[in-house]
Amino acid sequence: MRELPINQPPISGNKSALRRMGTEVYLAWRLKLLQSLQTSLEPEVVLNRFWQQVQEQLELRGMKFITTSNEEYLCGSQGLHQCQYQLTGEDGTLGELSFSRGKRFSETELSQLEDMISLLVFPLRNALQYQALARFSLRDPLTGLGNRAALDAALQRELQLAQRHNQYLSLLMIDLDHFKQINDQHGHAMGDQVLKLVGNCIQQACRNSDMSFRFGGEEFVVILRNTDANGALVIAERLRLQVAQLQMPMAISPTVSIGIGTCVPGTQLQPDQLFDCADHALYQAKKLGRNRTQI
Image 1 (spheres, rainbow, N blue to C red):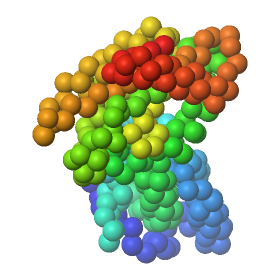
Image 2: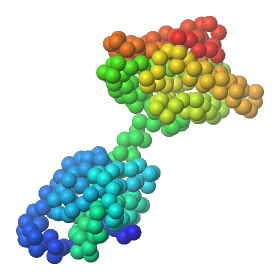
Image 3: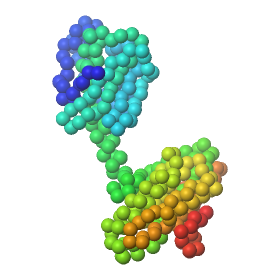
Image 4: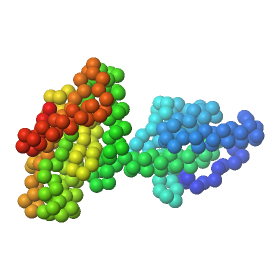
């Protein structure tokens, strides 16, 4: 694997490119590529534009980029022969970029690829950093779940998708019972610990396709894709029982009340209407004694 630091200066005077295109034409092409890469802060868009431009110069079958967090971006398809580059710099490693095709790469072609990659690395670094900041801004720092802004965006999107594809969509509204008493009697540090543990229970009880959020204070919300009320009840009860079995110091025994709202195929609910259904069910669960689930 070749290492290509992100602070490596562009390779100038590539003979293969210059022979085919001429110096001025090739420099104009490089400028066009750089300008195209700098117009987006979405890693997928940056990589797709790079892939499209690179194919104008080299015969390639596929390109793959794997970030340090194992996110994978794939363009084209896999080929028998590969060349790989680890993109690194002063602020860490960006990831591994690889190209593949049916025949071996020559040294001249590898040199040309490195020239092109030298134009990619800075726009790609900026896009990855922007993506990381955007994700961080949509996370609750205490529990690691999505925050209110993430919930608003996800609920709007998922409700539209469910209605478009004529599917169920359910919402769990979860509230920690008597949470104020925990804070008052044991302090806010212990209250934060309870919130973290409940957040973990939510993640463990839900499926990979479900989306979990901290709505605010001691309230949580879970969006359940393609799930009717009965299916939501199964998940909610699993979660409720896991919370009730938590082992906490100082005889703290947290419990949760859960309300379920469901959008039935064929209905055209707005996000606030579905939310109100779950919130009303939660109110009923608390009114009927807490530590229970209500549809």
